[in-house]
Structures are given as C-alpha cells and as structure tokens.
Amino acid sequence: MASPRADVSDRLDVTVAPGGKVVAISDLHLPPERTTVSGRSCEVIARRLAAEAAPLTVVLAGDIVEMLSFPGRTAADVLGAHDDLCRALARVIERGGQVIYTVGNHDGDLAWDLKAATAVREATGAQLCLAADLVLPDGERIRVEHGHQIDPYNCFTDARNPLDTPLGHHIVREVIPKIEWLGRDWLTGAHEMADPADFPSFLASRLVYRKLVRHLWWVVLLPIVLFALVLPELGRVQNRYPDAGRWLRDGEILGYGAAVDVVLLALVIAVLLRRAWTSISALALSQRGYGQNSAARERADELIAQGYTGYLSGHTHHPELRGHGDGFYGNTGSCTSVVEAIDTIYGMPPVYLRTQQLSWLEVSATPPAAAVRGDDEEAERRQAPLSWHATLKSARVELPGATRFERFLVRSRNPHATAPKVVASWPEGPYWPRDRRHLKHRHLKHRHLKHGHLKHGHLKHAHLKHGHLRKPRNADEDQPSC
Image (tube, rainbow, N blue to C red; front, side, top):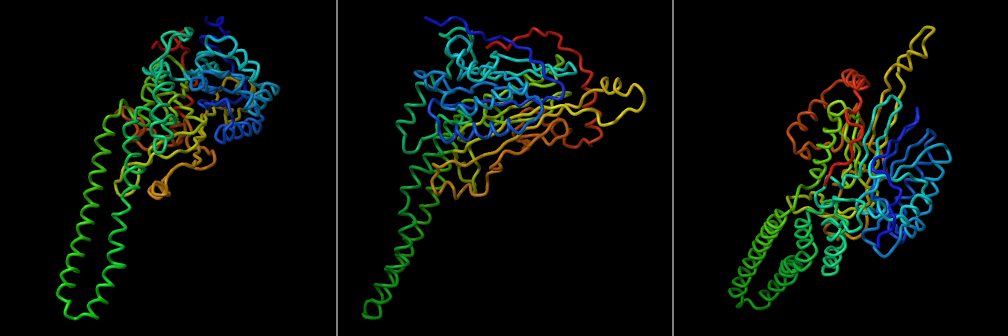
C-alpha cells in the first residue's frame, strides 16, 4: 500500500531576496554508502555555499538522492552518509537563505512517499516541489524543472502514482545491472553513461579497446622477434656456412615478405575494427551528446515566449548555458561520475572515459552601474532595471578504470579544467558548449553566430530591454505532460 501523499507542491513560487544569488545544482545521485565521487561532490558544494556571503537560494534540481538504483535503501540512509552537505544546507537557512528541492526521476519516490520526503525535508530544510518558479525582485521569473518530463523514456504520466514506472526505470533496475555483470571486465560504467542512447557506440568502443586490442599483441611482437632475433642469427649462420647462402637469402626474402604480410594484416584489422565500430554505433536510439538538450531548448523557447526570463533544468548531465531571444536556457549538468565519449587521434573510435563531472549554475543581480544625481536618486535607482547574470561553472576529474592504451589516445584531449571555473555567462557570453556542431537546429546556429558577434554595448542594450518583459500569460501552467 502506498504511503500517504507527501507534502510536495506541483509548482512552487520562490521569492529571491534582493541582492541575493541563486545556486542551482542537480544530479548528484548520492548513494547509500559514501564513495570517493559522492564525497568529493559534497565537499566541493559545501565549500562553495560556505564562501557566499549574499543571501542564497539553493535549488537542488532533482536526482540528488539516488533511490532508483537502490530500492531497498531509504533517503535517510543516503543523507546520513553525506551529512556534510546537509550541514552546509542548514547553514544556508540559518543565514537567511532558502533551499528548494525539485523532484527528478531517480528520486521520484519523494513525490508520493511521505516518509522519504520527510527525511529529506528534516535533513536539508528544503521545500519540495515538482517544479519551481524563481520570482526575481523585479518581478521576472525563471522556471526550474528537473527535465525528465520532456524525456519520453523517463517521464511520468502521474508522478504521484507509485505504480507509474517509465521505461528508464526498468532499464536502470533490470537491464543495466545484467549488462555490467555479463561484461564485468570491459563494460564497467555502463550505468554512468551521460548518453544512454549511445550505448551501441559505447559497446563497440569497449569491444575494440578492451577485448580485441589486448589480443593483438602478436601483431607487434612478431616483427620485433623477426628483426631482433631471427635476421641477425641468419647472418651469423651465413658466415659459418658459405654454401648455405642461397637458402638463407631465400629465407630472408620470405621473412621480409612475412613482415609485410603482418603489416597489411594489421591495417586490415584496423579498418575492420573501425567499420565494426561505425556500424554498431549507428544503432544509437536517439540524439547524442548535447542533442539531448534539444527538447529542453524548445521548452525554454516556449517559456520565454510566455514572458519568462529563463529556464533551468538538469537530467541529461550535459551542462549548458545559452541565450534564447530575450532570455536564456541553462542546464546544471551534474556532480557525479559520467562516462562520455572523447574523440581520439588518427580517426580511431572514441574512448569512453570515466570522469567525475562537477558543474552548476549561478544567477545573480547587479545593480545599475550608472548613478543618478539629484534628490530622487534612490527612487530612480529603484526604478532602473536590474542587470541579471547567469554563469555556468564546470570541471572534470579523471577517474581510474581506463586502460593505458585508452589514456594514450585521449592524452591532452580533455577540454575541461580539473577545478570548477566559469565556462559560460549570460548575457555577455561566451556560451557553453562552444562547439556549434552540438546545435542541431538551424535557428540555434543562427542565434549562436549572432550573439557571438554582438558588441558589448549591443548586449547591454538588449539585456536592459528584457527588464520590461511582460508577466507570464499563464502563471498557473504546470510541468509539461508526458
């Protein structure tokens, strides 16, 4: 029998204090037992929250507590193992801030499990909801959703129904564990893929680098043995037995021919491996990489057209910050381990490297720079529009598990810093990701180029315009239906 309905709002209006700052974090996927990855995430976030003097609104944008992969454990178990994060959130509230928790798909039980929701509320002091509207001091709004409701594989028809289990739930609980058990020596990390639909490419890459390559040592060893041992010995035999010179020369020619055959065989194997990877990876189930954010970008366009300033989501583990018309779209990324494809040298298949992602979004207001002189200076300053800024901070920490050959192929090809730093900002730019190949829609490419060439003055003028945005025409709109 299901627990009584938890006190979780469908949509929560959150008033951001004047001069305050919003810190949005998602997808920590904290396990019941503390790990190196989860511990590092909590420590980094706790330090960031402690360093901020302004009134904070901390938004935990879903999938904070990992309940989907551990159905036998409770939210209290998870938070008890990560009490340093809970203490940091409690101190935010003590300093006059607030903590908001929007429920995701991996912690979807919080929407109907009263016991779990109460444990989260008592440990973190958070207000729980399915979606939130951040109401800024000048009346503008930013919608926050986890983002799973616009993912057809992970959306709920009724988030309050404990029997509602999307396809993604069955994959996480039933399919992925069996796959990792069957390929426990070469498919580890399958459950941490940032692009689950890219599994065929992941399978082909691991097949090439961790199964086939390790058995091709003889392709390298045979020429070494031939040139280092056999050929010098043949020369010494020829000196001792001059009459055998003809036979030895024939044997030497055959040896060189065998070496050429080995080289050609290696080339054929390399071509076949690449073709096998290409053929298998073409079976991807949906968009890859930042293409997974395309539905969220469309959602941002929809909300901005209604008068919202921005749209924040998580879920895909692909951090992003980009201007959309008079507003912006931001994806918080994640603070957990991810397995992502990294392009390699010489056209080889990509390597799926396991790293810890550390990323989040921050939104703050800057008072107008120009001071107004006169008796009614304060009144003029209050009427002047605030300058809202959003920043994306991101980092990657490489984790063990890759083979030496994989590390050699991706050496110095990781574009991320090892400590969180600002990689994108709105509205002044630059945006993230910076590679336009990630933008699948033509109109987004046009906007990227347009904003990339705007001068600072034009950006400032366009930004001040959005201070007069109209109110949302339908303030009661809930999350998109599945």
